[in-house]
Image 1 (cartoon, rainbow, N blue to C red):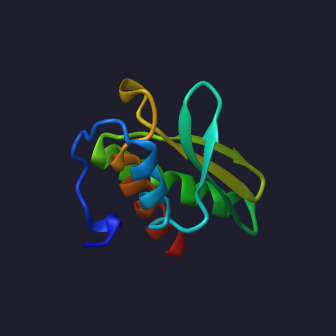
Image 2: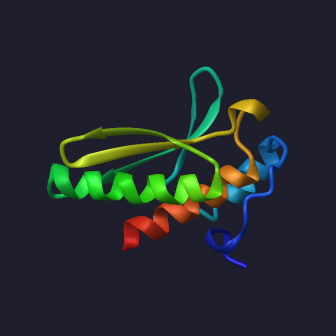
Length: 107
């Protein structure tokens, strides 16, 4: 089953091995480290309005799943970061939400 079709399951924090395996399932997402491990991807758009539409659609998916990203919106781009704060980093659920975000971006 593709990740984008999987439900959120309150998964435990992913091991480095699982992160490496799941990273292959989501194209263009990078692993970042600041205060904890996160998935990050920048999406570009021709206008601010198009970026805002994308952000609102991702927000609706996040609300439906009760799992929310950090989104930075600026002219022509949105940067989306997924992680599970209560689990201390990235979980399988974050990869699922990254895949769902890609579906939103594809229209």
